[in-house]
Length: 221
Image 1 (cartoon, one colour):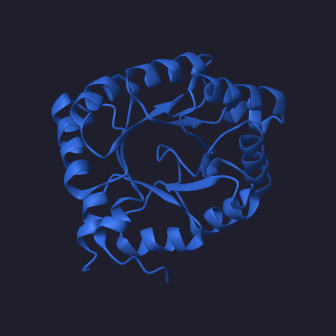
Image 2: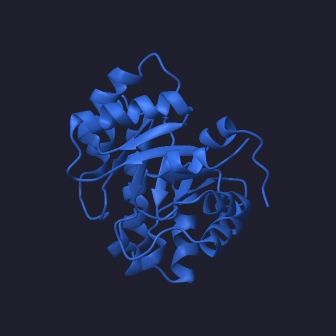
Image 3: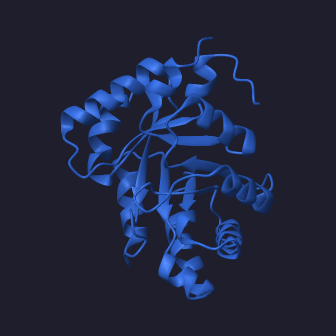
């Protein structure tokens, strides 16, 4: 098993996540305070809260990560959404791949959507959420290859809003597909320390978790 020496090392792999639709300002303020206290890599939040969170975190370590085309990957303005998020203070973008295009074999428009977000990101890392629970293994490989060819920095397993989340087998498949060219983020259903470490061992370089604190506090080093 992967050996994480300290809580701070594990925390720095985690995007501390809150994407619930009923989130209010107090929730975002609490999320940011937790990210500062525990040293999480970023807070991952909906676009409406990016400016607010950026003001809280402006002189702190954690970054602001915004989602784009979330959670369906079915909007036609992802580039504009990405640009607005970056202008508001987002340092990373997690976009949902256009699943309908992908599953129908429309590689051209799938790639175009990713490229639009990459161009709008102003050089900030773009993670492409491929929503593994809705794809065959062949589609997962294709999605990773399109993301890689379209200038993305990472591929990510899941939104957490569909029928399944990250699995070890999917992380292994994604890592074997992208090699060292892209990062792999595991997200969705990671609730325990054992689960987090299994994803890292499988090849994930970042984890998206809403139960981040429980995971960190269960590490006794």
